Length: 192
Image (cartoon, rainbow, N blue to C red; front, side, top):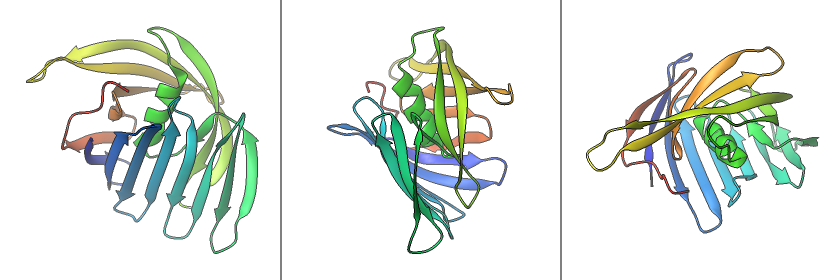
């Protein structure tokens, strides 16, 4: 079960995480130094079936229900329920990048457009966006036991045309824009 830490470079925030495959999918939990908590659960096809994000003042709970994602978002006890036709959620936690990449099941050099509900800032403000993911190759890095495959994804925000690169080793983000893997206590799960 991989556990470790990511550094969010823009705010110098530390995100301590654990992730593991389970009998019916995969789970990622984390806690950041600013008090933000993430609990992300996927099914065996990497669909985000349960998502919980909690900031110091806001919370959001949701998941995929057929072709839609539904969620409740609030700053207190009672929230507002919403639904949107989308494949899943995207937030600034690296766990979401892992779930999205694996859900697309892209072969080398293949690409797919994916509609997501992007959750922004401490208020978790939702914005529906479309992103193009292209798997642009796999590099192998030598380790003490066996070569570590690291998949490279070119991710394009279709609203702005901005292209970013995400590197994944199994269920761990090795590098992504604004994210640095600073600690890894055990190897990533490569057979997912």
